[in-house]
Length: 66
Image (cartoon, rainbow, N blue to C red; front, side, top):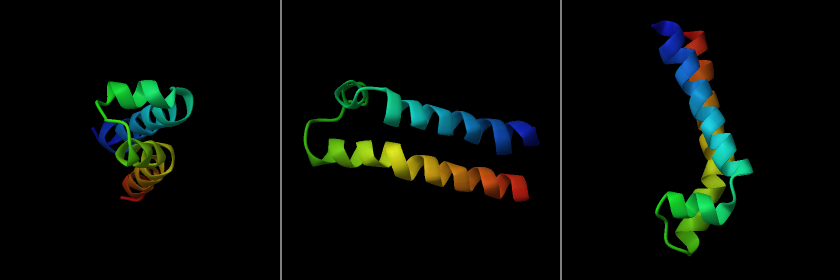
């Protein structure tokens, strides 16, 4: 239970965020997320590339230290 909650879920989420942010085409990913063109799409794209993986990494480290 601890392995799943504190390790596998954050690692899987980091993997998904990295694929969406770095491998998937920006327009296709934003379209799949239902985002309209504009600043919100750009903000979401930057968050998926940098912010989300960093925060999920923090969750992973915190879970490992507990």
